[in-house]
Amino acid sequence: MRIVTYNVNGIKARLPRLLEYLAEQTPDVVCLQELKSSDETFPEAEIRAAGYGALWHGQKGFNGVAVLARGADPVERQRGLAGEPEDEHSRYLETEVDGVVIA
Image 1 (cartoon, helix red, strand yellow):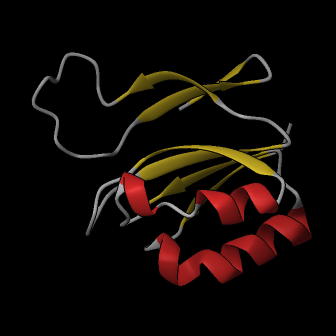
Image 2 (tube, rainbow, N blue to C red; image 1 turned 30 degrees about the horizontal axis):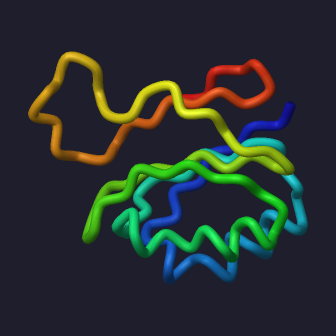
């Protein structure tokens, strides 16, 4: 399984390059950080069209993380940091892909 990380520094601005990268490199799992996008504006349709399932924990303006899985939908295990009830930053998402925990 090939797992990569990608600091997109704004998914809307970097979406064309992200889609190009997915097509060129076909990683199995991609962990994205600094989405700088709310949950409602995450480009799920474009990512699904590229052959990837996705889970995301967005935040407008800054922060935000996502896990993409080629040909599968990641299964959510945890959103946000455990033990931090006032955690307002979208910086942690724990998923499972093909039996492997990805955080």
